[in-house]
Length: 388
Image (cartoon, rainbow, N blue to C red; front, side, top):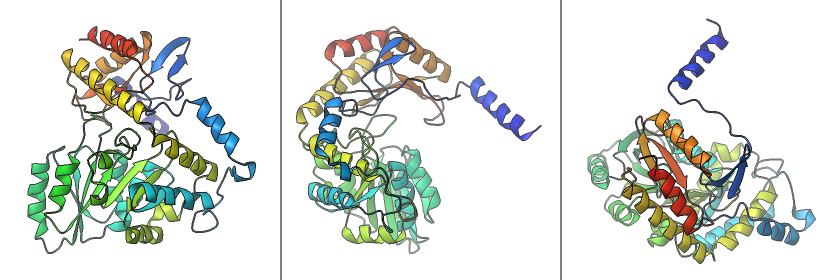
């Protein structure tokens, strides 16, 4: 068998298992899509506040940004010649909003594969929620730390592990790693209880990813940590601009000592060309706008509650407490058929299959957008009812 035959065989097996993937055509972040002549409401994007598709915001941004500031490339890393003033300005603004030092990254993935390898050594232990994002898992694998998992959102199990390792002389630091809102189940960590647990164990540092919470939670949209008043209690608070904030990149909120240490040790930061300054300027523009969007956040929260209750009333398994509402069907082939059925009905809802989720937990993943209205949500639920 040739090398190409080997990979072709592997692809054929993915097709047989209903797990073959390919890029979608004619897809954008717009709330309404035209896919092969079919008009669909977009319920697959992470554009939760509907900002990515707002032409008025783009027009305002370009109208107010001078031509000389529209740098399309940084041309080097920030440690060489790529640290334009706009980077410092955005970090100062983030620091002012969150109350601690801030550090920018090219993407959420860059962020999550770089922070833990930089901070951890062989005397570190990482204890992570079983359902953390793939980028965090990859960061853990790249680190020198030992790694154990606790059952999803089971803080009693986490405490058992902390009790076991707190007195281990070989362990100097314990990094507890979780998401605030989980990307596939749409449920959330009890941050208040997690912070209280941390206070009982001196070796613990908390690493919380707010990728799906920033923009949509908290009075100013700073995430679940703001909502539950624990902003200053989480050692490593990370998030992304690529979802509700309609941009690209990641950020870390931490103590200044940690920030300085990462600038000196974090490989994806040191050895990557920085983002184009125009992207940073757009992020700052959107971040400023987002903080006053309380009405949009409230409407999204109402939609989420109604959708969760509606899905559960239809008899589907749905653990969500957020704007990410999974409809867990189990079988991959059934899930993809259901996705196609909903798209034919005018709702762009995608199926999620293993290995993204565990085996036999394939699901439709509804990503709500605050542009959705009550009638449209009612129609979505009606069509879901025809699947049950």
